[in-house]
Image (cartoon, rainbow, N blue to C red; front, side, top):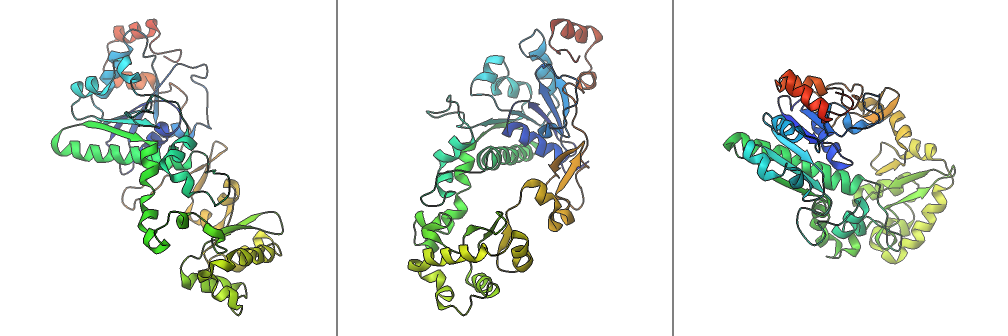
Length: 381
């Protein structure tokens, strides 16, 4: 069920953006078979493994006899492969793009890395913050004079990595269905994080052509920042356009204060106006400010934790958060009118579908027995 019904993806299970990409495709209806390593928790419930939801899980130890050939049989009917190893690892396993594309010419070979398949840093270790720092994205996400910090995993792993890999895989599949030719998709988090900046770069002429002016709260913009409330919670405002700024100061009763009326065009006053707003917002709780400003054109929002967000009326109305097996998680996105995604269900245990998938490959009972004896299928087989 879902818009990608009929699409088959083989995923080399790993950590981070690769599995997230696979989850996204599974959410949308693709048959994603996750090839997982043997582990002590094989067959055990794992409700927190959200990136495994909607997938079929098999266990395979690719270093054991017969495992690589069985993996290659898996890709015989697949549209795409997802792998997130360091450059060269899949080649050493005997499962590099040359081998896989020779066997399945229409395969889209999706590669997820931080630094990319080439370049001076391609073999170096790294994490989300490193990739977004080098791309320029972290600098732009940091207020002037503040320590550079970004939301963990969101900017590099997910936005700059998993989503770009998913887009690349789907684009590759569309092309392969036209001409039968597969290809390699090199999705690097540093590439995607940099590409995300193009929207901001578009606005540089309006910002005086300066990247400094593109930074949030640049030079102390009083209308583009978070403020602390009387209860210790935070709200955030961002009425960038003049008409929204007018609405913002009107609702705060500041539309008769000439300093605020001209506030967006008088940078020399921004710090003082921000200090005054800080004092004003400390007079009420977050809930009180929400009652006054939320849902208006003042461009306002409370800063909520995920559990708080899940209880917010707008989030509830759109059913963005779900609880499955006692675990809070978000529903599939985006939404499709004609081919809605399936309802969320329990996360499969590691190796839950091993026998099912092997039966689809029509392996002989002797072949399965040999793989089992060799330890290629792990303890769940």
